Length: 298
Image 1 (cartoon, rainbow, N blue to C red):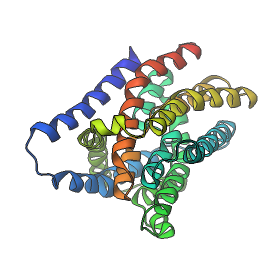
Image 2: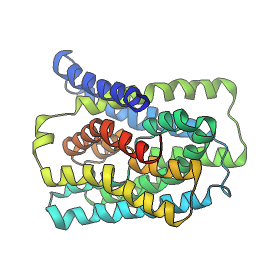
Image 3: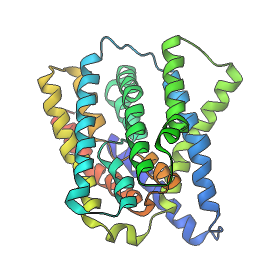
Image 4: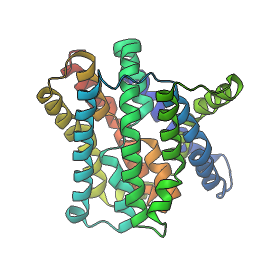
């Protein structure tokens, strides 16, 4: 029930975005401007605000972070395999490469808090702070290679990476923003999830579900089934227990992040296919996440 209460509203917001584009009569140039606003304002505010407020205990969670690094590396390698396996066009491949290792933080935070309370939130927050920069750098590097962008400039000036690094620096340095500025970022953060999901829904097309089917389903299957299985094996090998074991597997089992779509469209990748992967992985996670939670003993 907890998973359903988290997944269903997310999918309803995606459907709302699709309905808004079809029936609200907004001009076509509105949606690219919305993507730009999310990319440069809302998501960076969310990342900085979230990461800067977590207390990072690096020592206690080091084995969990090692497991996460390994299964994210496995996701990156499986993403590289998609090119020779399915021979997708460069823009499709560059956009969907992210699907194997990017995770929906909003879903993860909700479930971790429900399962383990503040301890779960602290553990998944630390893992987010560790994994988000790796995911962003890998995604930006691949998208920049297959576009006209200069990859080094895209990484150094990427607002998502800058916000992530800044948030972690604030947390580790024990720094705090002035109260009014902190409240402003909190309000922007609250808007980022619905805005991002509506943007994903606005980009959904039937052709996104029926083109490049091999690449599409490969990414969804790897993300929801294979990566969590790898994470489970690694967590067992590393001797993780309790909250650290559960959070490591939960992070691996999350659906594809909405940021993958926003990043792909901003950097010239194929938005249709990655948006379809986000939608399908979010919908199917309503089935796969309860399965993994059942196996974890919940």
